[in-house]
Length: 182
Image (cartoon, rainbow, N blue to C red; front, top):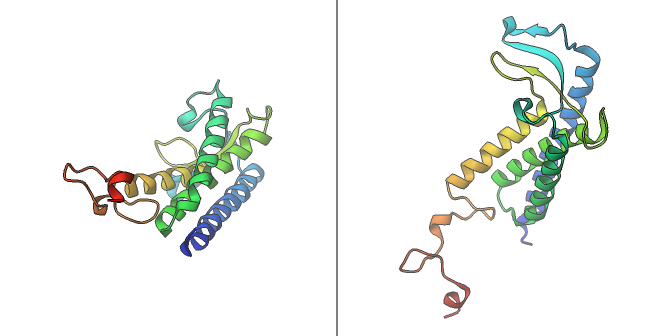
């Protein structure tokens, strides 16, 4: 671990905890104040608060395989936590924090809400025109994933180096371990 690692892990943890807490609190507010049948409108109808219990994935796809989404969320969280000690940049720390918290926020619903553990329904409550109802955890997954894709397409590695600045062999490939020791 370099000296930046604890700071970046702290950033990732802070982002994840802030989003996870916000998601939990807003879902509790939604459960208390919003209705499935009578949405609360604001901003001239641009934004509605509608309580929905989603047993599927994004856009309610796969409602019969809730266990699959639960398993995928667990795998994503574990994989990102295993990879997180390699993070050396705020960009990757924030993106990992957002995705981990988003996956964890919806995973908590899957584990502890009706109808049963691993098959619980996710509480969604934010609705925009012509868009499915979603929650803050969903926002975290989408925004974090967008940051991951942006960083990846720019060639920014977890350690902050650019893929294009790595030393290469004459054929354009990265040197092998044997080539580096020459």
